[in-house]
Image 1: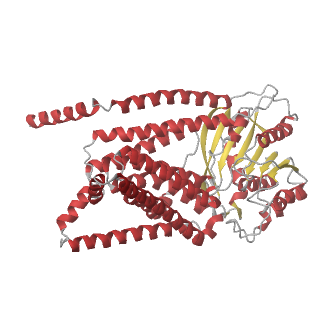
Image 2: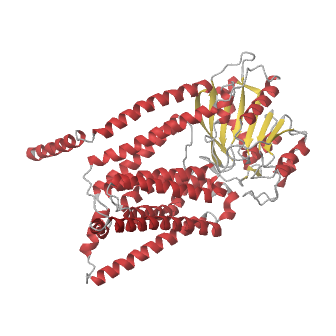
Length: 592
């Protein structure tokens, strides 16, 4: 017994001694350097945040039978001219969530406002759907989400510091419609700003199935008596909803103040990314709450630095994750095998030929890479144009099916030519190679690096916290498997073997990453009718990051099952959150 323990101790000592003190300490040096830089950037982010708000709370409440969530931001500034502070409830646009757009929390809290950013029905972490009807009131759920949140906020200790005569609403796009309805039905809201609001439509449209409840649509609900202190800001060339049918119509109904935006804007006209939009919104609330646009001091818009620091921190965190994935491979006994031995042999034979012939062969392989990448993109484009978002699923099935069929036929021909009989022993060797314990543990740890860092940062700083609203959506999201399966086939089984004329594995990995970036950007551009939605755009970014992670994993394992496990662990979680949005936003049922 004691001898067995001694042998185990010796093995553990050799394992850690050899691995930790190896020549690859360069990885550790880079990681330490990045962690030092991260400490400085996190400190800068903390200082930047402390200028606007002290802290934030996650608020949970019920509305129309669904559990909804909001972030409550506490201001740092005290108002010298009054004891209590105003409160703004902010409603994001369609397909977004409460912590993607930080402009309102940042700019209003630093001026002494409490801000509650709401995920209304069917969005973000909240449950329900945007066409839910409250059985108790027989009214659309969206018509009371802000009011239900206000009821919840009134029960919290902080509300004793709120001036109840200074509670306002601010919403964008569909969120603009939500605040218009809620302010018309609830006199507790004393002032409202709507950015590019949806005002005028005939159901069923945008997923809103309000037949019999048309009186809640803003065009049928708004009038001068229920829409006091209302400001609408909209671009005259809004590419999503018509300016005249919505903004001008609301002006006619309510005699509200309408500010037109005419200059070109980054991100498009509908998004209204403009300092003037923020300044006019702040002035509107302060004029109606404080009876002055100047008493609260000058307005300095600084939210852009907040985003710069956030993305700088995220970039450093991702770089650290990539290095950890590479370094962690040294603690596992990973046996790298070639993807295709015949290709390796081809490379040896090619190296003996004339340079001119080698260049021609390599050029052909590069052309093949371009052709396969183009076919992959065209396949997605064709099916998505026919069937909408679900077409991407069909495209993935076709691509994967064709590849597997070709590989199967080639494998059968290989066995026939060499008169080899397929046996259980052969099958076991394939399974053993693909499902090596060390590889599986290594891959799982690599995926956990990403998830843990993501969760820690999201809870530390409320930005882009993506989480599914129900267990059901996690199971539904398993249907995405063919999508990342086809992506990994493209990168690992088609493009990577074609790069075998390159000797350096790191160079091959870099080219794979560059190819992935080009392909994803192309797909995002082609899917621009969907990718303007933050949740869809965020999913593309996650796919790109996971592809880079998988490229590093594949470089060390050369095992296809490893990258599938990594994709499953990470993408499954994020895509189930997107499924929550897609189900919640009935506006996109017509795309399926």
